[in-house]
Image (cartoon, rainbow, N blue to C red; front, side, top):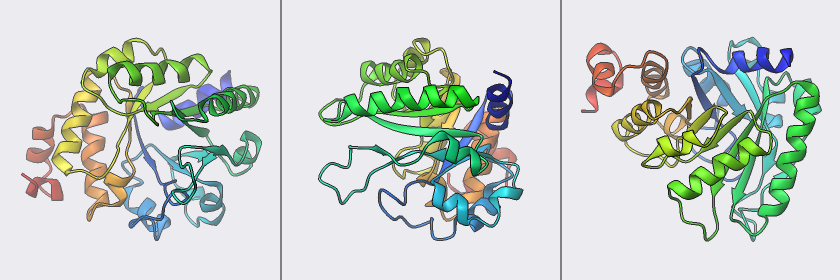
Length: 260
């Protein structure tokens, strides 16, 4: 599939990627998302792709001109609902393509009460995306009563791979090399909840050494007082294979150099 290969190259540089999801506002409005265009201007030099909902793409004044891969998110739920884990498909691949998407993403909560329908929808989206030559990022999370451990994260990654996704996003867990071993497509780790900058960078460094193909970091970039500096530090670790210590020593202009 030539189209899919070309689109994957817009998201991955030499097999590695830094994705910034900013799709959180549907689930719950968060600080840092007030002006996504300004956020994109700050970090565009250091991220490879951004995940956005269709309405944000339609109203963006900058996304069309940035050299950043565009992943349009097709799933949604809100924290106000009876079951926030019940993700629903709210758009389709053809509509995403009309917005200029390089890929689409689908969120599946494995172990939730509506897991079966979400898996069915992921499979159908993958079929539709294949027909258009569009990559699918499957965001696979152990949820509900399922414990987050190596076995459940490994299962999540494997499900995304087997149902036809081209990239899988899963939570980071100790022993991550075991997860990657059972998934024959690129695996990126979720940035997760806001945490300390150094802790985040060390987690990413370990994940990359364990075989991850990159990260999808949202809150830890857009919630940061220095989004540009976090994105630049992550870029160094992912694409230049720097250690956290090397980033801190070599980039004295970054806020990270003062986070010791």
